[in-house]
Amino acid sequence: MALLFWPMKTSSEDLCQYSCGNVTINYPFGIGDGCYFDKRYEVICDDSSGSPKAFLAGVNNLELLNSDRYDGNLLRVNIPVISLKTTGHPNGVNLSGIPLTFSRWHNRFAAIGCRNYNTIVKRANDSTVFGGCLTISTCALSSRGCYDFVCALPPNLTQDFNASMLYHFSQSIPQKCQSVLMVEENWLQSEFLTNANVLRDHQQFPAVLEFAEDRGNCVEEYNSRTTCNKDNRCSIQLTSGYSCLCHRSFNGLNDGYCVGDLLCDSASSPYNCSGCPNGYLLDDTDSCYQNTTAKTDTISPSPSPYEVVHENSNVLFIII
Image (tube, rainbow, N blue to C red; front, top):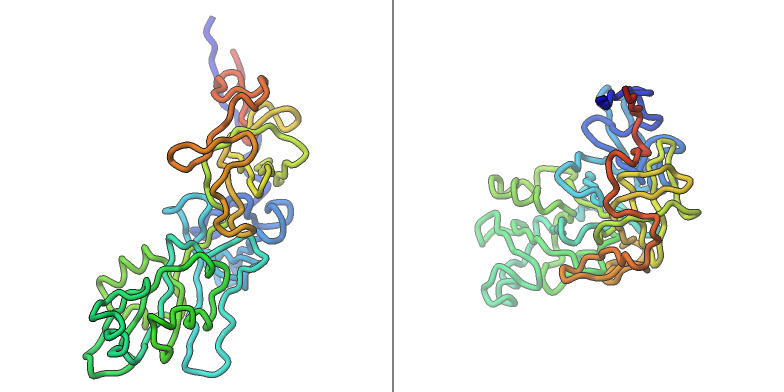
């Protein structure tokens, strides 16, 4: 007798919407009630212009961009430029109280159209790099307002982008600049090499937000601290600001478990994710791994595909 597994879809559509234009929306973010973790993760899909665009409802309605090149804990957004030429500078972007930070590793702070370059060269001993900032000349040395500065983000400047950030780099950047901006490093490297004036040609730039720090993989039982959307895409809250963001679910929500990414809430405790939650140990690569002796015998780290059913699947198998 042969066993023949024949897939049959029970539903052609999810209850939640997971794309808007060319942007993929992954839980804990979501579009519509019952599809996001809480209101801080709400995404609005606006198709009034005929070209759908996704916006973060809780962060000044920042436009979301395609983030496929990055891991699931990172988001690409458009950040407006702050002009310093007029009084009453724009407010910028404040992420305080929101589970998001500007990624230190994927963004750069830039000051555009600055003066007093000779002073900077003297301080830097004729070097083009000073105090963590790269000095870029876009005109002759005799001209004014033609120097740009690109700086790495320090740990204490990851939740607020505003005009006052310029003063943090006062030892590196002259204060007479035309504008400041936050920009994605990958975009900067690809565009700036071909056009030195590209930072002056736009009113907004792509930047990368981080909603959690990826600390490894997790296997966790569903419990009272489990939160799911309408399609049973779930997150399990652990200790010390950690959570398990589920990707595969086994044996159902009542007494099953999930496999996913171990995430640390870096926004609530900025970059204080050096340890691991209970039941996990730190390995040589600074990632967390499961302490299997602390888990119950009911959890198998490598379940057989014939013994489990994907909780999020809409497929039935008919055995003939």
